[in-house]
Image 1: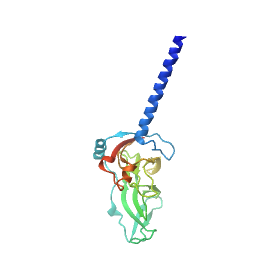
Image 2: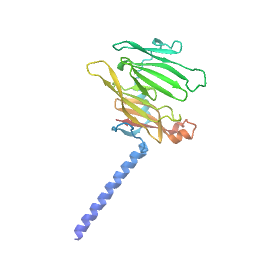
Image 3: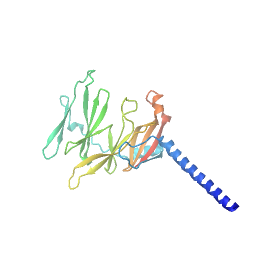
Image 4: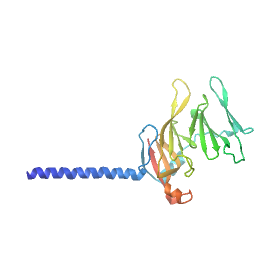
Length: 245
């Protein structure tokens, strides 16, 4: 009887220890990502781990931006940018500025940023009354993918990623978007589809770099650091995360 009681007692202790370890591990993950980084699209596997400033600097030095800034080839004439579309019926897309140098809420201004030749997409930015957005445009079909901010192509052209606009703009999301590049079978056409969107609540990203096709390093700061310092965190407020997906 005593032996039986002792066995049950030991099993209860082991169970409590296991539950404690599980809780501690969960708290460590919550501490890293604040328990608030969740994808708003269909659930995808992703993980945040700690990175260092040196990791970030090394990745920046190695990374090659694939955006071809051939803006001289598509100049703005009389407030209008015209981009050729190379489909079965060649045509062109037009982006025209309106109401510049006024206080009108309908003001809009466009800029041709360049193109990703590896995936046949133009990049155009649009600036409005209280908003800014990026258009990723298929050169063969004219299809337009709307992004929050300037994109970067992954090393092997499998994904595109972009951050949100700087923290503090009213009504704008905070986080990172990752887009999958799909190549149509038997053609040279590429299509873009959203793979992952992560919207943290307690921190905001300010910069990122691709380390590989499935790893992104992020420079971030707590939201409080932005709020308490007029939107510009102190140098010591920044820290670094590795996003694996």
